[in-house]
Image (tube, rainbow, N blue to C red):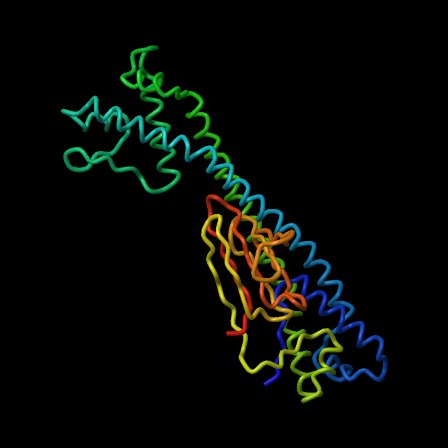
Length: 313
């Protein structure tokens, strides 16, 4: 049974709105939408102005979302190498305190049982442990810390690592703040725009009822009408680091959404030949004609890609 594939994402919805209003305006007094719009109190010109405002908010939201992701990456670059070195330092001290491993507690390292080192799980807690550990080392007179020989042997600068942890905390705070601002803008956008999304869906249903089997009439208003038997489903795929996957049965007018934290690369067809379409985190790519099969590549060496797409099952 024919059905409308409603656009996914504000930009695609705005494009549909403009197409509807253009057709309605062109038809003038003969427009079949006059009765429906009047009955439901819909002003398409006002809707276009609201869409423009919503797009402005969305642009700021995406910027903040991307900033949050960038801050997270900077946090990880500062944090993980230091923590890796810290764990090596702890193991060295444990070998020194072999007969009394609980001496590591004085270095803010938790010991369970007789000698099991247990690190905190959370980022903030681990940063606090690292900061206290470094403070213990720096509390010794120059050259007197039991950790000194290990640091020299492995060319480790504790002062630099201490600074890196402080930077990681700062980046994490900025990431959280940017994400919170992005979420606030998401709510503002939804409050402003969601009523008009309902109008677009209502107009689509009205046109489908009006034209019946003549789906071309509906398409003239910018709607995508799918005549396939199978009903499309939103399918989420996870792509391992530096890997790729091929998606088939993508719906014309549907979208591919990057739900991950880094860029995803989209290629037409079953290979990664040619230049990719780069989908930023949080962005949607509307599927054009000829792109029912695409290959998604994950260029990240650290994070899985998460992609959702409207597909024919």
